[in-house]
Length: 194
Image (tube, rainbow, N blue to C red; front, side, top):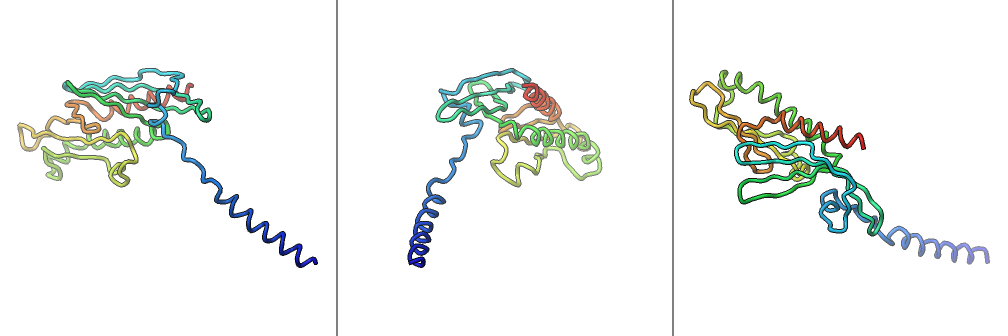
């Protein structure tokens, strides 16, 4: 009799356990961009933290805290970047957790930019060269904000050309990576206050 009860209980346990384990995989939470773009989402707080211009290209950085009450209450924070040129504009969203790594990428690009005149004089780097950070190349799609630095041809062979910062494919002549880094730093500071 005991053997029958133990077998019955074991059979019930085996039947119930897989049902509990497989009954529903956890849902992936929507990204900051997905949530921020939803029409039902409420903007709880926003503040423009920077406006950068290079040639006819513009970038406006706005820190946001957005809230979605459907189906579960969720509040997320980050930056909306509005990029525009004549007859073209787009927005991209950067989750708060990516701001510090992106800030470091632009800082490193700024440090590298300072060494370019020496690298050109030593023949290691030529003008009319495009340079980008390695972080974004190792894991494509990891960062919504990408950057390259293009050195246009210089009038003199051993001199650096005009640096052009390319942000998500938009060219910003004369814009320095340190300027983007400064704006990202300000966004980080403003979100920490909230």
